[in-house]
Length: 380
Image (cartoon, rainbow, N blue to C red; front, side, top):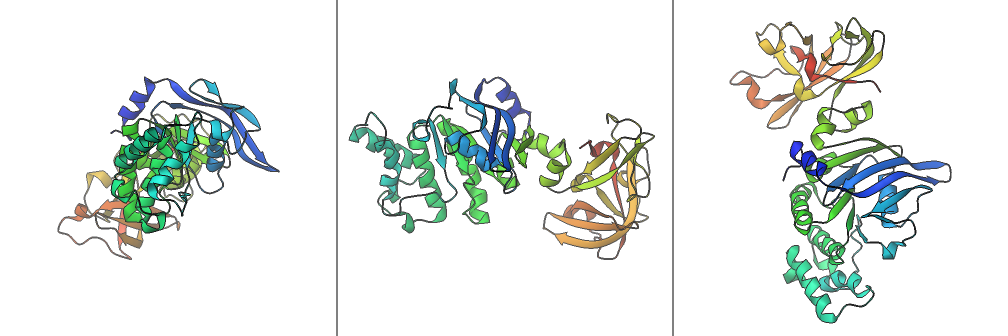
């Protein structure tokens, strides 16, 4: 299972576009909720729409489900234009954040509910066989006669998933599917959910505001803001090579420097020297730009300590400052270093970095540095 590397992207390249979203736009009065979004999803792909509340991701999901209709654009699934297909006739199924289980029904009745609505009607034996298959898939057979209130949050989530998959949809839509679970259960369930979806082989679109969830579960991510789709790529692409400031700041944590290009470097008032840019930066003299540097790319050393990584050698950006804050997270510590300009640079340092020596503490003078190629240039 390769969600982060070239394998996911390479595998997708050999598959046809199964779902095509073409210039889809949706307004609510004066609010442009979804702004001219175009996207292609491959068959059997798990794709995440990621963004903060109000960015348009849930509205886009609801249009795929037929719960909202686009004002412009087309949605084509497996060659079929869904414009004239009502929600209850679409080959899609949506699993809501609340799970929306019927409280008065047993687990097996909840899973069977959608099957009884199919026309022509299925035989009882076929419904029972499909329900048993779904409950076995999510390992909930022994809870078949229980009511939803007798289940844990994780168990309810499995039942909701079984119900969503029972009708064998062409497209599974998940709206914040793990939001109701606590952090530890959510982390375990993410991988369980991916394995289940891949075993069934259904094409899936996941909506979430949780970066970790998107990066763990999806082969590709689409980052949305203010109704627009800003960037699409694998989790590795999105994190390592963001193409705009919003993506750089929204995904993970970053140090963002702003200035203008002068002599092949970025003149930045907050940094003591012009910031050397990556060799492949396509910028002209005088261009306005931003440089994003992830905290794990920034090295930290005591002032005066010898280190080839933090020297003033060619291609290295370095500055001295004072440790303002430290967050100890076990495997690593996050240092907030205040420069003379008042600018704070964040460095993520593995705990093993210091060996047997005592790590720097609050108020210590330290040096932060990164190589020019470790920065990502952003023109917007």
